[in-house]
Image (cartoon, rainbow over the protein chains, first blue to last red):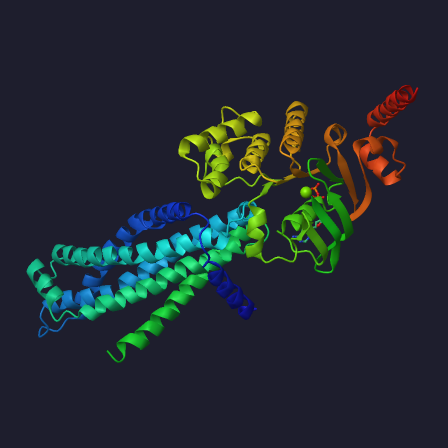
Length: 247
Length: 263
Ligand SMILES: Nc1ncnc2c1ncn2[C@@H]1O[C@H](COP(=O)(O)OP(=O)(O)OP(=O)(O)O)[C@@H](O)[C@H]1O
Ligand SMILES: [Mg+2]
């Protein structure tokens, strides 16, 4: 059962790589998906980043009670947790819900109402025309969203810290630049590319292969979101073990 | 010309199509008729390759379509226009964009030329004021007509219509039938139409295949149908007393004109 899914998933990915019938139309579809996925989920990403940043500062301050530890450490800890874990992973899990369910239900609806068949009859490779642009758009926009989320989260951590009287803005900024490892950014981007691929290809698989009617579309998008989330967490663990343990 | 040779189709262990052979001729309207659930849609999907057949062969102008890979089929598919039973319009596009889509994908026309072609096609199906509407905003019959416009916009060599006039009023229905028949003859297209509309059968049925529970029960023209002795066909076609009477009148008229011809 699992193996059939994996097999069909790999076949789907393989089937995407054919020569486009018309580059301009593929470009147009790619742009549409970038707007849908990128701009469409910007606001939700901004909202969660603001709150994660604020909460991180307050909770880190709560845990670092010792007077020997300088206040600037709070900024440093917030920076690293945001970059290493919160921004890529939490943003992607939320996007799995927002983007994933949209991709799965859009493709599911196209399958059930025979729009995919109509495209096939015209001689269009629907895997490359419908799925490939979605995956590419996710690969382009999700890392961008993660970067934005990082800036916003760290910035809102500062605001929350100052407003709550935990530390001054100078102390926070000192912490931000203290012992900064550029590799962490690389790591965060590696995560976001991986997650971007998961949250676009898995829902595309479930949506593209829907059989039945409206009920099955709903089931497919739920399944798509759940499985994307699980895979994100697995990949998160895998990447951490792989890239951080000898770094 | 599309040739079916001993086509069989099963879903699981349920056999839907049993050993169907027929020749769909070019420049003629080839009708597939049969009761709901008799397998018309399945047969059409087998012909265009949306469903794989289990036995037999489908040939397009002598070339075996059913043994081709999907990539090889692309060439033939560019010459196929198809209207789906539920129209299958693209939800995210307006009526005009739907009809323009195949042109954008496969032609090198400028926007002006494409627009002209789209307008001409929408005019032919009698839709002048719905260009900017989305599929969700138009009626079922209008969707059908947009579907037909989209199917003919690239001047296909093979045209498949799954119930082009179900859900249309008799007048529009006649108009659509005439339109399909006209372009079939005018451009010498191989046209296959699924229908259970008796008007269509009588008006444009150049060649009729009657399916009964997945088998080919009868084959002939709309003239032959009047004189057919096949009981199942008669029960299906001339279901009401009104149609029975109409059949007898037509029989008389045809016999009469025949005898005056020979005189
Ligand atoms: N994907 C499928 N899986 C299993 N059975 C199917 C499938 N598609 C169609 N069938 C079965 O095949 C039979 C023929 O269906 P089909 O859609 O061809 O009927 P039809 O002649 O087009 O009827 P209608 O006039 O109502 O459109 C039906 O009994 C249907 O249940
Ligand atoms: Mg049908």
